[in-house]
Length: 102
Image (cartoon, rainbow, N blue to C red; front, side, top):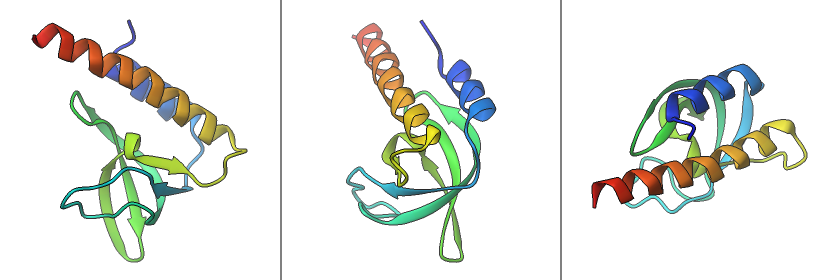
């Protein structure tokens, strides 16, 4: 099975930066809220629990935020397709990690 580092490398090699995205997941006590728009500039790394972390800006503030919680605004772009595929693979990877922990 693909691991998070392979996903990170694939997206670093294939995404076009910067791109506009929207927070698409509810953020309990989050720094950003569902519906907020950000400009994504780069991939900063990855974590098993949160997946790939990106560097994004909203206004003048810079954030490090889970890519999984973002949706590309331009639904016709290759970035949109790449990130939606990443989300599907990451869900499977995350669920397998949870299963191993039981």
